[in-house]
Picture (cartoon, rainbow, N blue to C red):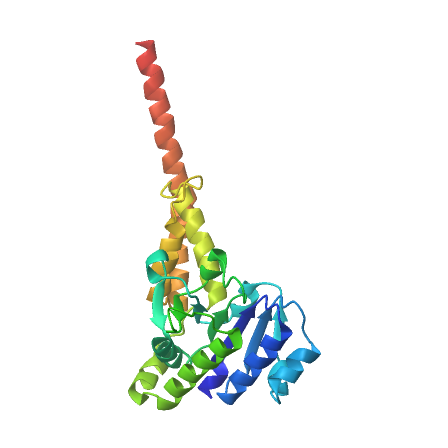
Length: 264
């Protein structure tokens, strides 16, 4: 069932009751895959109390130390954020569009929806893992939305989008080669950064948000596993002995020319 491919990830949740309430919200919509990144207290009796019977979700919840571990096997990662689209580099989806994207991708791979800290949300470093950001339209004069309520809204949007379905889209997705998961993409981005430094396109002392822009570009592209391998082969060639040897040869020749000119 495609709903099983939807993962809710909660980062550093400070109130265990919010974990229980989120588990209850998930199960009412048919979602069961919960990952917790460094929760303040879990397992916890308050979480179980607030789950109101969704004990199975809590019992099977996975606790990890970092966000990368929570999304390593996911092919689409969506972060929740209340930040204005004008102040970020990421593509934004409203809650309904988020549901449609999740329904599209969960037919053939795992999808993660990430919820940040109750007080401060997600850091920029955590947002780097996301292909999209999503937000819930709320009253602009009162934007206080409990994290469990946010889980409920997005779980509902995903559930109805999956149930509504699109047979032709599902068939199309199933005929496509597998997409690269988050773990593969992180390796890809690290390799890309090193290659860009090698060819002097990226100055590590003055990166100018270049890698964030590349993450946005390739995140929207949704690379296939074989495409990641192909591009990493290209990066290796750019970093290889032929390129470096040619660069060294040019440098040696320039130094020789400079010496010859001084002798003259």
